[in-house]
Image (cartoon, rainbow, N blue to C red; front, side, top):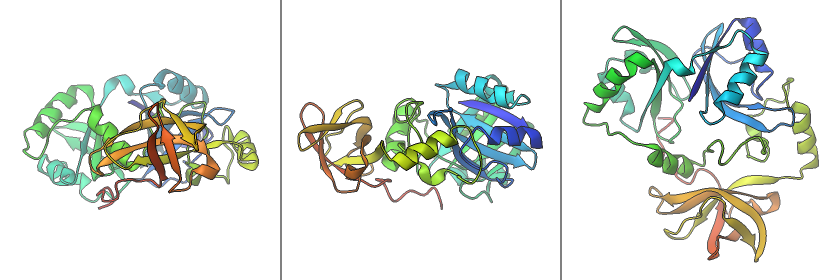
Length: 305
């Protein structure tokens, strides 16, 4: 991941122009999902922003477009500090994550609500904690100095409730929730409208790409991201063609077997008139039957508990 620190009113207001969400009005101790857009409203990166205090934003970005994102942020917000190389990130996710972190001595996380954040200490080292989660379950993201991360990792693994998990597990979990992956489901060729993120856009202010986004919204000439699910264990796969009544209408961007829902799940871009839940489609060379479905596929997540 990438991490950036933006301090001061002027810096926050400059950064505010880069994203489609209101960062000036973000309350201290809260997180906000957003995207950095280009002039054509394409998604340079989707991000999570933490408001650490009245004058400080902590911006978390993806690793794939990090060079481009760093250049963009620092060209508009010249006081921004890129902390990516000095920062490690450990995610503790699952219904038992709160009790594990409290056992580890991170008492400041106890009152955090969903999409809350705080600064805290562990063994004398400064840690930033967010409760944003990308799994649909209760979960926390710990941003630590590199030299503190190994000891924290080892301590967490000592608890019987904790097992290490890799990106494969993350991928099935985020797909069951309908969460996008940058570079696969969204990139600079897609706008927030196509990505079905229009509900997050704060239209009542100026930001880079707003004019292009408004024009796109007015014309409504774009495909939209929708959920798709099969009726058995067979799964849609990325880059497979989507067909309606035998005619090619779109493409799958993510797909896998969803172990929590017991069927194949994924997401695809299709014409908006085919995106309503229950539309029957086929995907791939063997015409796997799927139907469109609303996100999330898995509805028992504990992220808001």
